[in-house]
Length: 332
Image 1 (tube, one colour):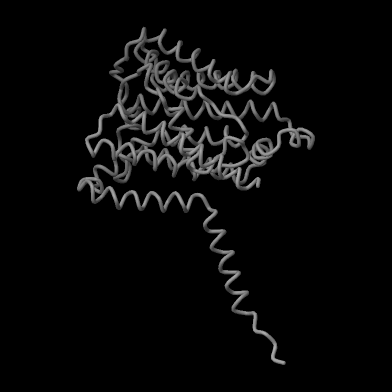
Image 2 (cartoon, one colour):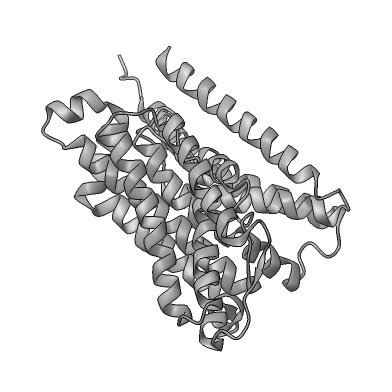
């Protein structure tokens, strides 16, 4: 009796397994969606693939992407931060108002970052030590920080003039033909991605998000890690606020309005989960790109700018729904 040749069957199984592994890589799926969307939009608008529009679109997502990096860390830990938009506004307002009062703009920027760090420290302490729910705490901090921005500016944008060109270069200059903002985003993404993949503290963040009780029993100081998480999130929001000031030379109390929704949408699209334990910096970047392309498409297709928040809301609902259905399928 001749032995049955099972090699082709094994090869097919290996090939199927490999394809499934590739399909599970969320980032590749997002890249595919972005490519398909770009092809469709290129037919709908002749200016979509122009160099000017591509650069404009990338610049429009820089702040969202930077904030999303911090939001990813918070989501991975099982929490989130609704105050990032207000922190972003406050950092720009503090920096701008101090610069207008005669302080060196770089020193003023340090104070803007310190204000952001203080808000993150307070948020982290109340969430980590006092055990207040992240939704309630960050929502309350959102109101506090936004109030500070309105008190400082009396509700009116501050036009920051007379600052050194070196400061404006961050938001308006070019390096090797590429806007400096894009270089800054690249540095933030590379450094944050390296930390999330290599640092011991980052592994603790994933452990906490996957099973906080087990992480505590294994010796991880959960409360201390959470404090650092919200400090990091606030720091990146503050950087985004100062870069916004550098780009537009205006410190507005509404500069970061709605940023928290865009950041959460970008993170979840990128593979982060509201249940914690999942998410990557690269995924957050790709999610930001996808949201930015959708917003750019609305502008190019002459859709009213007021529809952007509506679309962002729908995108967020769709992303959360997909996340819930995916985890429900895994659980079953």
